[in-house]
Amino acid sequence: MGMTIGEKILAAKNKKKYVEPGELIIADVDIVLANDITAPLAIKEFKNAGAKKVFDRKKIVLVPDHFTPNKDIKSAEQAKILRDFAYEQKLTHYFEQGQAGIEHVLLPEKGIVVPGDLVIGADSHTCTYGALGAFATGVGSTDVAFAMMTGKAWFKVPSTIKFIYKGKLNKWVYSKDLILFTIGDIGVDGALYKVMEFSGPVIEKLSMDARMTISNMAIEAGGKAGLIEVDDITLKYVKGRAERKWKIFKSDRDAKYEKIIEYDCEKIEPQVAMPHLPENTKPVSKLEKVSIDQSVIGSCTNGRIEDLRIAAKIFKGKNVNSRVRCIILPGTQNVYLQALKEGLVEIFIKSGCVMSPPTCGPCLGGHMGILAKGEVAISTTNRNFVGRMGHPESFVYLASPAVAAASAVAGRIISPEDL
Image (cartoon, rainbow, N blue to C red; front, side, top):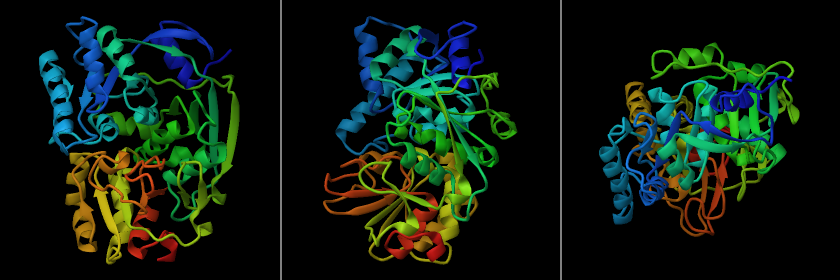
């Protein structure tokens, strides 16, 4: 019996030739990740257990990105816990604010995660690295504490659902639209504790930036991981930045899938997820008139250079509606710098957008764009739960950078086609 990509990686990290769904295993991890919200608890449990040294100082990654630059005393104290621990343990991969950015944009950019890795992170969107052909998944802070001590984590081997995207993308349709459409189709628990394996001719043509957007939101369908097979596009991205050797795993022809779902992308329009779940999707053309107060373009989902280029294309020569606040959040310092070099930042500022330093900020209702009661935002982030970006009686719509930019100009949610 053949195995899927996910099963092969878990088998390799468990030093076994074969694993099957439902099997409980203890596996060796390649990267252990935490941030300024989740790491302090992991560090506390690490010390409570009597541990003195991490298992490998090169394999622990700490990134202060959620409430940074620190918004208040409490967040400053959280960040200090990371900083002190990183220096105490002499961690190779601790990134201070001027070097850092949003963790799930930063790690691939730095070449810290490579194909074939097993990555756990105390953040649900760790699944982003599945775009690199790595089995990457979010875990709790106590699991991170255990992994920091031992280099190991336990798993129940998940089954895999294969998604095949055929046809070609329509104008103004991007990877964000594909994943929103998929979540709208199967629901927020449609892939609960499953590996989502994304494939097909449409996926094969996507850039790495676009692929990471898709893998990032696997968790929004309940997915344990969101994997894309390594190909020449992956290797071109990895070569020259990878810190370590990598190993490519591909699903066998006779691999067993729980189900296979196919989509004709020529039938997919730009999508919008309405409050208060990512599964509440509609084509933007079917949305009734929705006025907005804020547009957010960035996050670990859509804060890469390709996303900013898409938004700048819309904004060039236009102005943000006078009743709308538009916030642009580059994913990392390097993304910010590249946007400066390409003149994108000038376009944004001349259009009336506000540039933010790289941070998760408004995505989790942290800072840099909190919503008041009754306010409406369109956002390129990944979640629109009740109170996610501020007041519990605010409303968040999810969309691509193109739709978010066009809506900022119009003052209401529209397709770029309608500008």
